[in-house]
Length: 333
DNA sequence: CCTCTTCA
DNA sequence: TGAAGAGGG
View 1 (tube, protein in one colour):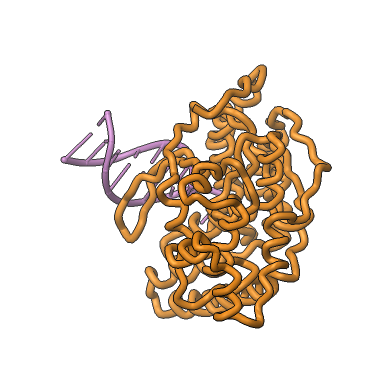
View 2 (view 1 turned 60 degrees about the horizontal axis):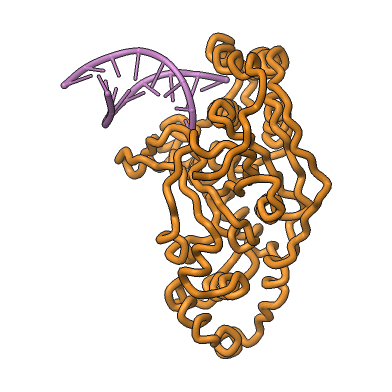
């Protein structure tokens, strides 16, 4: 989702400490993979690769992050996207164009030796192909981490699992998670807090947003929150030009959602979008079993197949494999 | 992204 | 002790 709605949620973020919040968390897999693929790159934009040229950035990211999360008592559960809704076709098409344009500009920048531009365009050209998807699922399986295939949007499935109480939160960087009804969303579910932003090093900490706090704070219902999103634009509709979060919120609070839409976008029917956020396709057909990591399998997969150095990965896995039992579930504090 | 090393 | 930078595959 675009940045338009950000302002609605910013005041309701609470910093949290990972060690204080053990439990199962449903993680938006595509969101995570894109992040790794876009960020784990060399200065000229080249991703990490094995000797045959296969991308390994996502494997590095998944391996180190999840082992770290597990050692903190968190049980990651990855939720993968299924078939995107027809409503998303325009957004998907636009994203593809942006990616392809970025890929061409990456090539160009590299030819001309413009490293900084190359890095920027390389990031924007990140794409999840079938090989990346398959290797990600294989690695997660070897780590003993459940992978769930959503019927449609992964964020919707993750939110559903949080609503049912099977996980204590849905983790994603996108605020759509809250539109889908997740009672608790976690952003920046990472270990190391240092991030480089425009050359500056800043600290990013894990944060939690509670849907109830957002709704009470703005004195709106979840349906009205979705109305605000529709006015500013979602993955499923374009939104009204010139209407940002603040204006949209005022419109909705005054009860003018339908009349403003009728005036500005008479051709647009918001009902299918509302319906998708309220009743997205989800499944109850999943399990969250506790499984230990497969030590030998991990060594063979990461080292033999993808060229990771044994001495780097062994000491990371060993303590997890020796662990007797999962830490007991606890409440957020 | 995450880890490790270096250096003030 | 911790911020900054290099390197990972």
